Each structure stands twice: as structure tokens, then as C-alpha cells.
Image (cartoon, rainbow, N blue to C red; front, side):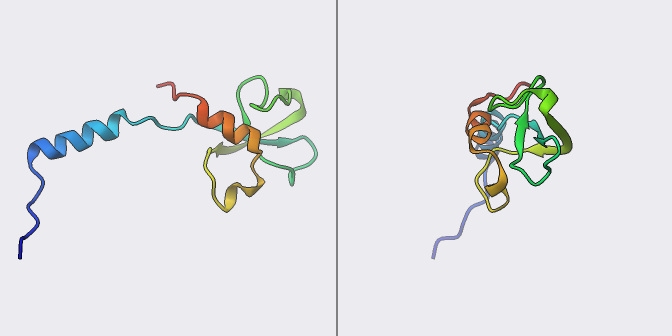
Length: 91
């Protein structure tokens, strides 16, 4: 029965380079429409949300808007989610 060989130095280097160069999602602040904290969560991008709500109409909260599909993201704005996925990360 063959045994699994440990990763060599070259294999580990390839994996770490691949991981470092992989695109990561951009990070946006989460926000809600003013006066309605139970509304959908939006991605805030400086002057407004990614879906077009002006900044003076939203309350920015101390959380990150993460563009992924999960149980927790059911309350996320689908337009903001799609647009956040398409934005490259700026390091």
C-alpha cells in the first residue's frame, strides 16, 4: 500500500504563490437605510451604496459587507452582493 509522501519544498512554494495571487473579495462597510435597521444590508462605498442609495440616506454600521451567498446573507441586497463580487481588491 503506497504511503502519502510529504509535500516537497517546490510543492509548498507553488501552493503558497497560488494562494497569494488568488483574487480576494473587496471589502465594504455594511449599512442600512436610515430609520429602518431591519431593512436589507447594503455595501457602502464612500458616497453611497453599490446599488445606488445616496450616502445621506443610510446609516453605516461597524461591520463588513462580505459578498457571499450564505444563510446570513439572505438579508443582504442582491445588487450590492453581485457588484461587490465584481470589484477587484485594492491593496
